[in-house]
Length: 193
Image 1: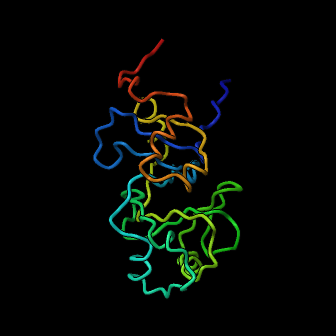
Image 2 (image 1 turned 120 degrees about the horizontal axis):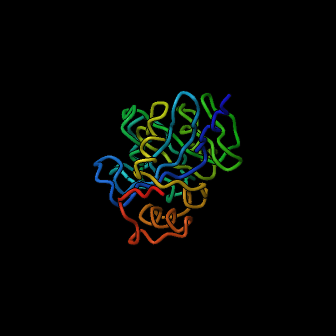
C-alpha cells in the first residue's frame, strides 16, 4: 500500500518567474497565489502595471470618488493580474469589512471579485491597503506543479509588505531576496541528483 504524497499548497506564496522564462505574459513576474486546491491555482501578477490608474478605473466604472480620498490611492497603477478574465477587476486587500465575493487568504490578505470593495475604496472607507488587477492567473490541476518541476518558477512564502508597500519595480528583487538568491546566479538548467 503506497502513501500518497502530501499535496503541494502554495496559497499565500509568491511564484517568481525564473530569469530564463521568455514567456511574454509571465516573464519577469511575481504572482501572488490566492488559492491552490484540487481545482487548480488562482493568483495575481503583482508587478506588471497597466497604463491605468485607480482614478481612471473609478471614472470608467462611474464611481464617485470622495474628495478626501488620498491622492496616492488614486494614482496607484492597476496591475495586469493575468490572462484569465482580463476584462474584469480583482482586488487584493487587507481583510476587514465583508464584501460580496471575498476569499480570506491570510490575516493580512483577502481577494475580492465584487465591485463593493472598489465602491468602499472610492468612498474612502475601504481597506487600508489594496492592489487592483485586471485579470488573474490560473492553472489547471497539476499544471503549475509541472511548470515548477521544469524550473519555470521559484516559490517562497509571501510577504504582504512586498505586495502592498513596495513600489512595483522593486517587487521582483524583493521576492527574490526572500529566497536569499541573487537572480544573476540562476541557471535555466534543471539539476537532478
